[in-house]
Amino acid sequence: MAKLRHIAIAAKDPDVMAAFYKKAFDFEEVRKTDGPLAYGYHLSDGTIDLAILRFKTDQIGKGLDYTGLHHFGILVEDVEQAAKKLEGLGGKHYMDQGGDRIGGFEVKFYGPEGVLFDVAEHPWIGTEPLPVEKAAAE
Image 1 (tube, one colour):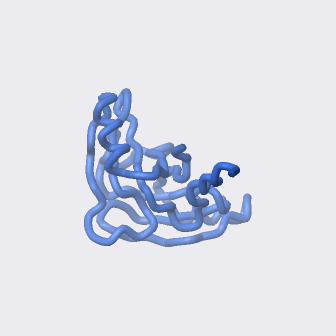
Image 2 (tube, rainbow, N blue to C red):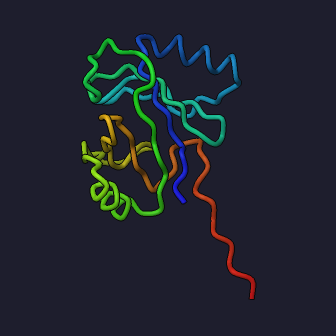
């Protein structure tokens, strides 16, 4: 079963926002990023990755000044299989992660009403992997 493992917030000042959440909830900073898509921080409670990012591209059609919930990420067993299912349900492929994937998404999709989300088969840094299926009792 797929699991929610990533939430991204668009922020004007990721430094201040990340410091707030680290102090308020003792979240661990697991990665700082400054790549072609965004600048910011990845914080974790050990289960979910909370990305606080100043985006460099407008992925959701709200402009670069937008702040608030940006997208979420789902951990799946097989990205290719999930992508086929999503497309069959009307999901629209947006982009694949280029180059080495370092603790982030593998494929981005738009779902109903244009909501952006990530799909990955490797856990985000600092997050729980998918549960291991227990072998059937003999």
